[in-house]
Amino acid sequence: MANSMTAFGRSSINTEYGNFIAEIRSVNGRFLDLKICLPDEFLYMETLIREILSNELSRGKIELRVFLFMKKPRNLKIVNHSLLLNISSQLQVARKVIPDIKAPSLIEVLDIVSDSDKEHNKEQINNSEKSCIQVIKLALQQLKNIRSREGKNLIVLIYNNAIEIEKIITSIEDFFPIFLENYYEKLANKFRKKIETIFPEGFNYINGKELSERILQETSFQSLRLDIEEELGRLRSHLKELFHLVSSIENKNTKTSIGKHLDFLFQEMNREVNTLGSKSADSKITQSSIDLKLLIEKMREQSQNIE
Image (cartoon, rainbow, N blue to C red; front, top):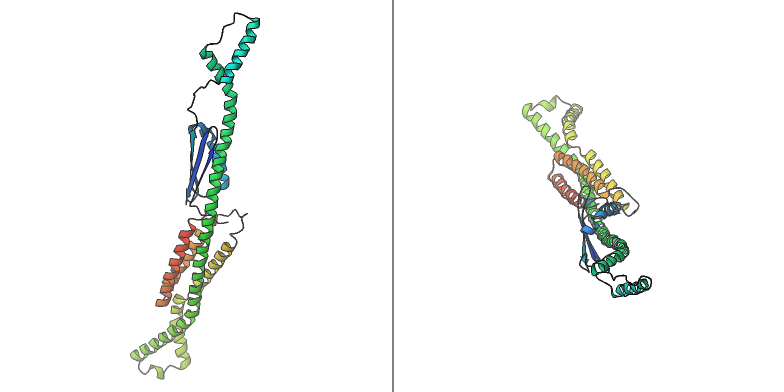
């Protein structure tokens, strides 16, 4: 499946620990480049989060930011009324055995509160870790959905451009034999005129067979310079591979980097078009070469945004 490398995802989860917000954005890049910004409380989870992102994404510059808005001020100790009643009842039980036992001071009560909060905090931290991962996965899924939709649109654009390229190649293939025949005829006439200019009575001494062979020799060199069948054949081959690649993109199990494959293919197509343009001896073929280069460049720009 072809995925665009440009997308944005955002999600939020409200927990008793605080409100988690995750924002993830991606732009095109040759490799997977991860930038992760986490709240101080969750910096230790970066390796795990990096692994999650690496398993889901293969290319692009990825920036993940996670925000945490705490519901309670950090390190604020709140004495629970039921806990005080529990301490009081236990103190009364203890005084039945030790009558002169002293009541705990406020500092000692706060220490008891801190100890009782530890187990609660552990459970809360575990839940907050799960919430942090969950909010990241939700944002990541949104990002992947957008990348998938945009990737399909890019493939449609590439396919439409490939259809236009096929039309241009077909028009060149239809036009070139006629052009070549006319070109040879003009070249032969030009050769005859040169002979008549240099040696006016020359045709009285040269028979038709010798003249044909001489003209063939002169035109053979030109024909090698003008022969574009090889370039057209390779363009056809590359175009066939492009259509095959586009048609197989719907296979979700493929691990091939489609963007890199397409980029290489367009480089080769562009190379053939350059050679085609350099061999052109007609304005129509020259214009067709320019049109082909523009279409290939469009596809190349689109492919650079595909994962």
